[in-house]
Length: 207
Image (cartoon, rainbow, N blue to C red; front, side, top):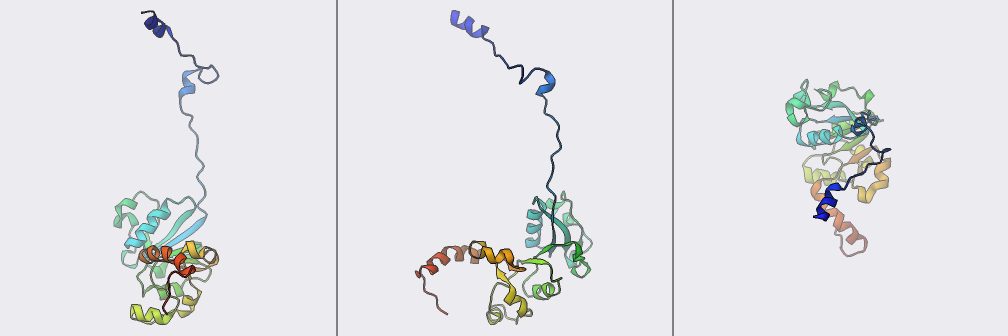
């Protein structure tokens, strides 16, 4: 019984300097300083699956701001009308690539099908950084490209310039590149475990 009384009589003391008024228990309203979106991005082929995923990722990036979205067949429409999950994002309407103004763009993600990308990228301003998500610039040898994709490469000078975008292997080259050929998902999953084995001569290459 005495123990029970002792328990009831016990008090919790709060330091006056920590909590001394009801107002001090309320959350202080502060303005969160959002980082400036300093890198201006264009997405070519925004209405396709690859384009929509790039838009989704970039729209929430702290430093990348999307200033141009192109989609020839959806020109004039909002990205939210095609992909409702992007409707809450503040993004420009889609336009035809020929109507795009790249003067307010620092870099582009090209999400067009292979075979169409070469001519588009060849016509872009030379100062732009480009990440191409098609297969058009992944193969260094243009004869290999023709063999596997059934058509000659129409931008061989860009093919020689392109850097294969496997960051684990070519990180330094990618940093300085103007045109990056983004690897495909299957090749990436195969190359990452194979490259270390090739370097120590545990895998023999047949040319």
